[in-house]
Image 1: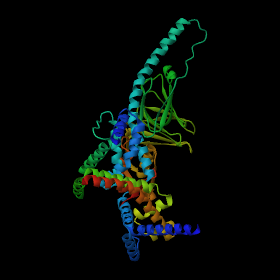
Image 2: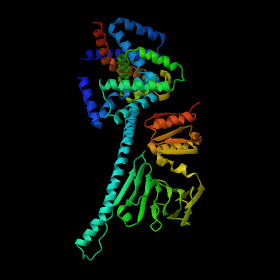
Image 3: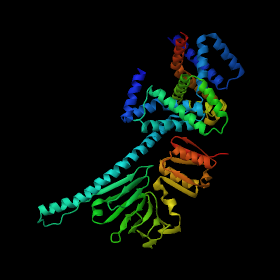
Image 4: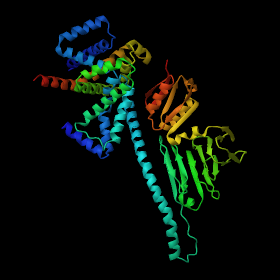
Length: 348
Length: 190
């Protein structure tokens, strides 16, 4: 019994030994003696020769490699692309459903008055129930919504608005915003339109403006494209603020201070057309935006690469690779993707 | 048999069956990447290109008429896209020559080579973690055994051992392929 065991062991040792030799030989790590030894072994049996040739082929044909994690990432990305295609469809559907909404809005008062007529002498006034609508844009997408009053809202990626359709019907135009949205508000002097965010409220009568108020951010930001808006901070010394076109107001909820600067409003509102425009921004700014859109982490090597100045226009409709190729083409920055993360490297 | 399931999977995709599309992707994606890399010599670019082929297939699924097999449809689509891409970037001179060389090879051989590389790639991904790390450093980073040992803080003996194991496993993944190759050879001889 013991004798047999030792034979098996020796056989294993021998097999391992030739495998080690083969490995050394094909990878170019063998000494000339080892190569000679392997030649002897190859000649001693056809099977040995075949074994070596197969190993060599495995080494040579495995010239390119795609890690398993990359394959998973690629499939995930494809689903993203497919979702983008789907969201195009959804947008079409939601436009249809808007007509249903109009119909519902028209039908509701009719039903109400019929009800009033039939059950006429009711003592209590009829309570209008809340009809809350929540409309969101998933990561990487921009959605456009028409509110019951005709106001158009573009909802940026990873953002949502909530509004009460029945309140709109009672001329109470109020929207909650989490994230970033661009509003083109239909004019109505008597019924102001309000956008509520955690740090500030924007009140307007008819105008076009952008609001950026992601829940995770300590900043509230608004850019006015046209018209006039009134800003009400929820904390700090300055309670009301009138904003002029092409002004950008950034309110910092930590130190309760705000900055007003003159800007080109278009740069801040281009995203609604699926574009992001960068004019003299740093690579770090750009990366922040790409991280948000594609929900993927970026790394930069060296770290100060982020200070690189950059200008250009990116489209949401581009896939990530196209965006990265664009960076590569316009600056000396190379990229590679590993484990669902993007590495940007300075190329020489 | 293979063709029958192939046409079935495509009919399912036409009806918008995501699971069928997902199976198609799993079955062909990486091999198609290796196939594209033969033309483009850039695996990341190949990945991006093959993805576009899959997105196109899905978006246009109702309009696409696959007369032969899904497999040959996919390979031909990828080939066309690669050549389009190279044409657009023809400022680099060496490339057209290499495409001519590739075109001299029978299409079937190119597909088989891609499948072989895919099988090897899968085998590499399935290596035990330490073993894979060592193999990747050796094969793709071009490090010598001693350098790998130093980098990973292990003995050269361990590197030798793991490289032996790696090659043995990869070699085994080739067995089926060689059988097919042999059969094709015997068949064509008759």
